[in-house]
Image 1 (cartoon, rainbow, N blue to C red):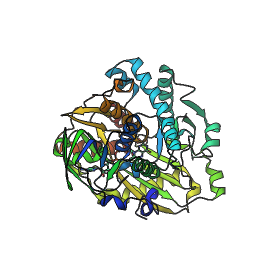
Image 2 (image 1 turned 30 degrees about the vertical axis):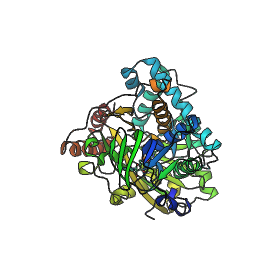
Image 3 (image 1 turned 90 degrees about the horizontal axis):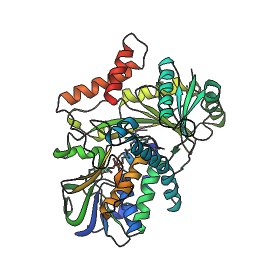
Image 4 (image 1 turned 90 degrees about the vertical axis):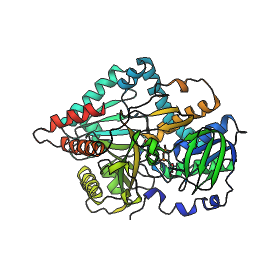
Length: 450
Ligand SMILES: Cc1cc2nc3c(=O)[nH]c(=O)nc-3n(C[C@H](O)[C@H](O)[C@H](O)COP(=O)(O)OP(=O)(O)OC[C@H]3O[C@@H](n4cnc5c(N)ncnc54)[C@H](O)[C@@H]3O)c2cc1C
């Protein structure tokens, strides 16, 4: 079915239909554009510290329309950029502080969901990165060694031998695994819609089907009229590229997913994942999977084409060649799935800055946060807290993290962007093979991503 698993059968019962009738306020304290995790976590924390602040969330489609309602559901402590990069931006101590904040953020998402009564299937079973060939073994050793240098090996990153790894994740050709305990599996759409429901109950206005055209420091012009406001926050991540001024700030990269039918107990006892660990292997072209609360596998990967001039279109939400490749990869990982049907296929855009570094801050009087690449589920919660502090004018531990105020350099103009991104994606796929030259190709990809 060409629909996102997480929204299948759920969307109709989400109480969003009334929002079109909700009058658009013309004057509010804070206007947030975008009803994904970034916008809604910001509204949530602002409302917690200052319940009297009037908040309007403006959403062009429906709550969770973007990546927040479609993602792989890994609520992980992974940052899009390396700790070395963070240390270069600031200091080694700040990089460690940030990583510790991310470990806590994984728990914070669970704490907030529980306190708001949001049933999003949150299960912190950790993340298993399977090692399935020599190159992946070398990559795992390098990652583990790096973790040692940061003092994270042991508690936060473990290198499992083949037998231990196989007992947890019985993937073909498994030679070991990296295990990171700080990752939870969630049902992403239930988290974003649950958050929206809680905000509505607390008096926050969420205006769906309302497009923001221009954002100024104290004014948002929308398809339903102008809104005057004390502060404006842009929380539109990959969709920001639709504004001319934003076009080269990030690129929208498509990540695609499939889901299987629910698997029976005997299949699950073959595969493992008894703690609902999220899983991948250590290839360069990222893949990611989770055992869903209803016993399916939701499985995704990058590598779908980048579209010329950063175009985004509903027509790109499915991609037959990527779907086929994902099915083949999943069956290669778990041969027991040979006859299991794929029931859902979907995808969506996520934002990547030129230096693969997320950022939050103010530009031209408008606050913004994003560029999480594929790691936005937990990081957007941290950014929501930072944005709430920035709105409140609070100098806190959060407003001093190294990526606050960071500006990535702009992407190249077309056609160089299109040629560069699609060539690198092809190189990354190719470098996962063992053909002559693939090692060199891998080094080129790694040097770009560093
Ligand atoms: C297929 C897929 C899998 C992923 N898997 C993971 C994962 O497992 N773990 C992880 O950490 N991250 C993952 N990500 C990334 C993560 O989902 C995103 O980084 C995160 O959800 C971004 O949240 P956001 O609120 O900033 O943006 P979004 O959720 O994209 O929300 C932006 C919102 O802004 C609205 N908007 C845009 N323009 C306008 C306008 N002009 N006016 C009004 N509203 C507007 C959009 O309609 C949209 O609802 C994945 C992403 C994708 C696409």
